[in-house]
Length: 310
Image (cartoon, rainbow, N blue to C red; front, side, top):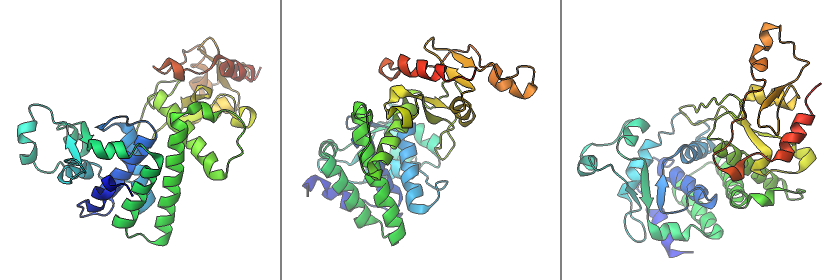
């Protein structure tokens, strides 16, 4: 075993779920290519990952309290120095330790919104095999789980780490899937993560963005050309949509077109008041990701428009 992982055995924690869950979340995000340096942004994606792991362990997510491990992890040692060093704002830095434990995520963000993971530990966690070993070490050393809970965690980690490999190489997500069901789950998870992140968790039709306090997203990842037809899980074959608009698109009532505008089926009666929410979408612009490489492909948009009910 990589000696740099020994520090993970020494996490000081009064709760077996907080620091171990945060460290596993960080490891998963490193493997997904979302965390690319020792500097770790405390963004929506990392926080959602932490809540997912907490829910896997505890069966609920409302008591996850991410500010606790994000604050207290700085008391632990890494292989080359502090395990976790918050990037305090200049005015807070001299007073940070005197302020005491934050009582909410907002209070924590008033002090820092990024931190630095021990550089040697970060380097070791680049390798997929080492990352998997690190997660197993944390699980078995800190989490005295019932067999069912341990089984859930093991399944979650297998899919999460395999999904990370797809996220780093999204072109692998095109073509016939002949892998085991676990790999299919991993591809699906990678598709969802890449699409929602590309659209900043905002609906491509209405631009509505809502993330619950326990980090659930309102929007869903919708295939433009269904996977059963295209075998294509690349993010360019997807949009982020609210559930009602995802349903409407899948039922060919609305469609985005190559003109990057929304089109509404003529079978919808605009005179019926209950149809207004769909009719108002006609000719509205398609919201696009900032990253041009994540823009929906013209071929996928053309296919979707061709399916619109006439």
